[in-house]
Amino acid sequence: MGVIISTVNMKGGVGKTTLTVNLATCLAKHYDKRVLVLDLDSQISATLSMISPHDFAKVRKKRRTLSYLLDNVITPNPWSKLDIHDLIYPNVCNLEGLELLPGDIELYDEYLVSEMLHGKALQEQGKEFQKVWDDFELVMIKQLIEPVIDDYDFIIMDCAPGYNLMTRSGIAASNFYLLPARPEPLSLVGIQLLERRIAKLKKNHQDTQTLNINLLGIVFILSAGGLMGRYYKQVMKRVRDDFYPHQLFEQSIPMDVNVAKAVDLFTPAVVAMPNSTGSKAFIKLTEEFLEKIKVSQKQLVTAG
Image (tube, rainbow, N blue to C red):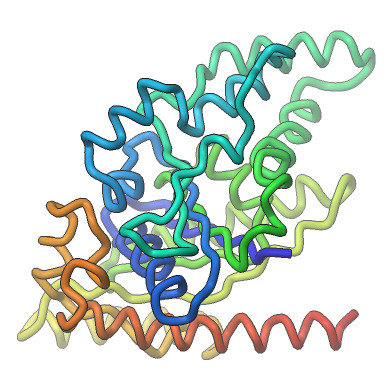
């Protein structure tokens, strides 16, 4: 069974998508892992970091995006012809094993979700709307990816900033979450808010199902050097004081303009500019990532 990971932070602009696509690409390119990237953000940054706008337009015209699956969950259609296997974009960047489930700028209609869940609450007499909503967020993403979990070593989900239904459902479906952060005060606020929200998510579902999701680690994405670098070190120390060492990645991602340029090429930096400083850092980060996964799985086996 594949390991399911959410990349998430309450704050935007912290390098979440950059981490997702480059980690996934490194796993496929350098470690022969089968990896599926799910774009759960309506900004479709992960999608456009892996395929061109022209290719995305063709995919969207054929309705081969995540929104097709979500529509069938919200308003089931017995005549639907496509399933998740039909929507997955294979061999991204010509890398065997790297695949993408494209996102969409219109993922779902919140009004239709509320209407559907209200109707379900009325059918299940005595069941509160909040309970119906909680049950839905628990299974929405999980049931979408269930048919392909065994096809991959890793399924990595790029979640939207904030804490909307998609993000909560993605977290609930995950084994681990990655927390990218810039060493800046507002980014730290995002970390603290997310930790509280995930604790509350686990509590909300403790009567229905135990959510065994754990923080795999915080990854620092740096954005400046020089004098600001000293300030960043102070902020990073504050984070290290609040978390255990195993909850932090030793490898950070340095400021590298080549990583930003790769976005304009609609290609992960580790493919577009493999010899850049940023790409080399992602390769080292991936090695550390795999070691953390191995240790975490051993601990789970021992605990079991």
